[in-house]
Length: 132
Length: 132
DNA sequence: ATCGCACACGTTATAGCATAACGCAATTGA
DNA sequence: TCAATTGCGTTATGCTATAACGTGTGCGAT
Image (cartoon, rainbow over all chains, first blue to last red; front, side, top):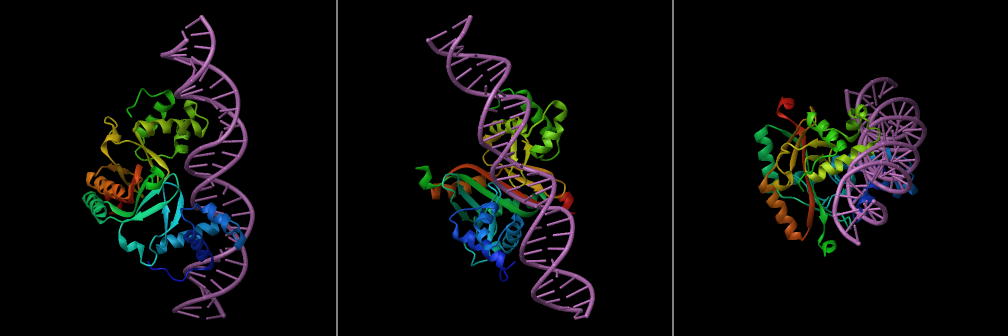
């Protein structure tokens, strides 16, 4: 799923996420875009839905927030499972991939004949700076 | 964290989760316990908080639901990271552990000096029966 | 014994996250 | 040109979770 040109709303939402230095909730995004004419949550959620589909934005399930992909130039969907480390103090998020983890999880699903659609890996804790 | 004797509310909530053959939302639990005097969400959330702490219940972040631990006789917290495969069709959940995955994620966090507190691994898709 | 503390509990209210359902406008392609 | 698709705006609603307050009970320390 490669990203076609973004619509106005999608571009606005993406821009907000890119500029943020951490994940944002849909409602926070909404607030940041009120000056640009956003009035309702659905405007944000609809844009997010597409951005997620294009792979340029990730959803952090454990904190109900969204974050711009760390390397949007490539197609993130081709990197296998994306994992996140989320600092609960400063809110910073690190995105990474580990093919061995992918492999082990795929082994498991294959063994169970489970058809995986979407896998979430999120580590919450304290980043180096905050743990000190 | 080993489980002390459960209080009345905790026992009721745990029983509901044990009898269910899939994850339940807090509000679904609430509805099932109205006959036992439950009136408000907090009664459920407070019980769940303790049950999570004792390791006899897991929270599924990606679907905002709760499920009884698959092997509550042991202390689940001692098994390393718990992973879940969640069927989006029938709602069934499989719980598993993979020490190699744990190891890889721990390697990563150690490398980044990230202090992990809680790790979520959830695979959503279709179970064997539903994929057929 | 009784005071103080910790903890479970009950209740009301509110905050935060997400989607349903309707209608309109622009685009596209048969 | 007509039908289908997609994006957009709006109102309303539903689901998830917690804040804040007060009550009662058990239990150890003085």
